[in-house]
Image (cartoon, rainbow, N blue to C red):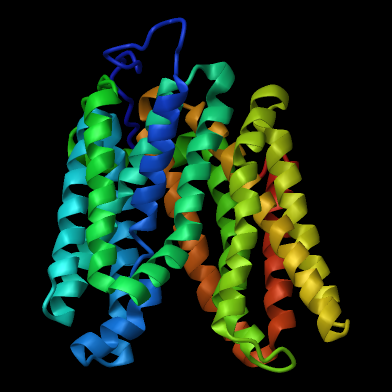
Length: 409
């Protein structure tokens, strides 16, 4: 297989920040907010599907295409757009995607048909990948000794955006209408774009590869770097556990013996805030103790959490709920800690290929989530909740084995 090497250009920013403040707190806050609001754009539509179905007299199947196309657009953007951060100034890419995302959100707010909504949703997914331009930008701006902490802080913003987006959009849509929510979302992205235009420094190009060669180099990076393969595969396996749980939780809580509604399932999402808020702590540990230790610790937490859920199914209903709540906090903490540590590892492989390395890692995560959702739903339908927790436990064990066995993958 041909080897694609990045042109040896200095992977530093073109307009360096003052040496006394290599990365000021307001800029970190801007990056975290931008990542969070971009990622939130992927999920605003989900609580509104009932309102959208009534508005356009559309079937559940038709309206279900909206979040599906949003996620599909994001997947396409991860593979085909995220690597461009190594070829072009990341600042320009972030500003361009912010403009496109703002326009797509406004078009969604003005849509007069379900077809128009669907097309705008696809563009939202593509442009929302600006979040995956912001994270490697933060890694490039941060000094090596603080990289884990800075990336962890930015990831906290991204994760909080995902966690809070459904809650906020549901409340706004119910009180003021779904169009108002999309207008507000567009305004938030516009503000981020203006702030990024004023505060974000330029980044030097780190490769002169053509677009085709840039995409082909993803395979070369995968083959050349064992650290990338281990990090991507391990995080992909953890994503299988994550997605299998969340894709079946609401159905499980609705059935016997719980008979609980969607509101309770949504409340479980707040447990993910523990993992999001712990991301900077995981980053600091990766800076001080090394990311390898953090990846093993995180995977071990996920294994323990899902094993506890499996055993918890033998308890009475009240005890099962407590086990579910505590285990949800623990496994989310483990998955987010592992993600921060894996990003720390990946961004340290090649400073000139951070956007492509990030694209490989995120694509592996997306594949893991898709696999976990599909297999989790199948297992739940055939053998119930305990089959889902066993799948999640075994997948997390696989991730832990990859991190413990040094010559794996």
